[in-house]
Image 1 (spheres, rainbow, N blue to C red):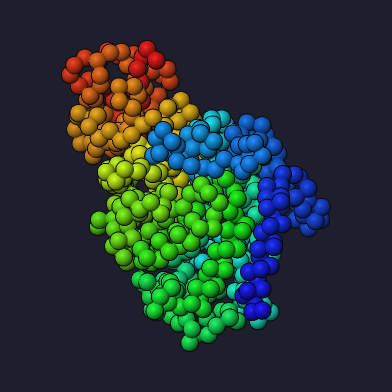
Image 2: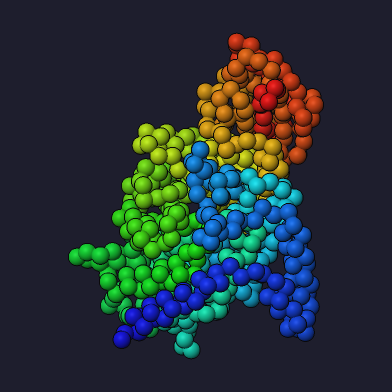
Length: 554
């Protein structure tokens, strides 16, 4: 029996054992307090504080549903009545998130990052929001792409594969400590009612290196990737090059066929099978095939089909393509674009983080917010024409600082996406950026708790006029019942809206100041609309303002 075959059989047995207790209850005994007290008292204080925060948050958190009638727990799904949005057990929700670090660090860098720090902080925010229609949202890249540019050099990192004494990896064997850390993370997210976008592959680590999009140097990316032949004991350079390419790296040239690299594909499948064995039964996990992929559409479709055959029924599978700023098509394969994926039934959602962000529209937050909404509307129109609407996920926004971050965060809601989440603080930003992220997310969530957004769809025709100098606006709503309008640029003046005749309650909210700028404050001001567009006077504001309009008699 070959090593890979044996490892697969052992993995299958381990999966069967793990499924008997896939969601253990997190208790204080899981935290190594005694050992920590003796050597690292500050770390003990952090763990104790985090445990207290979690205990308090758990009293108010909207937990994931238990299995019904002895069957499997209900999974996150598109909301049946309006599949632009997500739902859990039939309850629609909007997912929001913030973070202080990269998506792989909680799993792969245990010496530098607390496993539960972001989850506990996000759970505390959700507890204060206290709504079943707002959930926390995190990304998880299970292996480390060896990107040390923001987190500092770390050696060794905790990778899925077993690392041998000579520093190389055995791709046929998996690291038990990695598996336990990933499972602990997923357990904690489930217990806190947090949605996880689990990313199967990372592109940065296979297209950056010698001959790639750029070479970050030894210790980074493909130089240190476990699949790079110099870094494992399973094959040499005659099987897979130690160099790479900016587009369609040799790592991607493994699909079955005349030129497919079957040796490497076997190990790729082996890893994916193991990941499914660990995470396949978590109802709060959506499966994102890649992080900013520069592969081909064929590669993406292959793995979408591969996961579909092996994941439990109802598991959501999606993709995050790297796109061009010019027109939002796939950066290396134009067909691997959100527009293609949105109309392909292999995918249950599309992660549009790249085409709606600064990658697509530059650094100006108004351009990102308005242009991103236009692209989302384009994708939704294509889906409607094809006969199937699916959620469009934004798993990360790079504009994650106080100078424009609020406008971008809200624009994903007003543009028609299913989620809105900040990326890690960009570049050498100050630590206060993280505080801003969580404050901004909480304000969005508290506001959303009073809005029946799950009935909404984009309404570009709703706004009839804007103040002079305004760069544009986003509008979303339920015809004749309730609307949100997002303004950009700070310009005060009249906003003309095409409201149906009758009495409407109007709220003008300034998210950055967390202030209501209308008579009546949070309760709103009642106005009478006639046959002509109604002009609502809006004062000047900082960065972005939100108009919330709903029928006064409802």
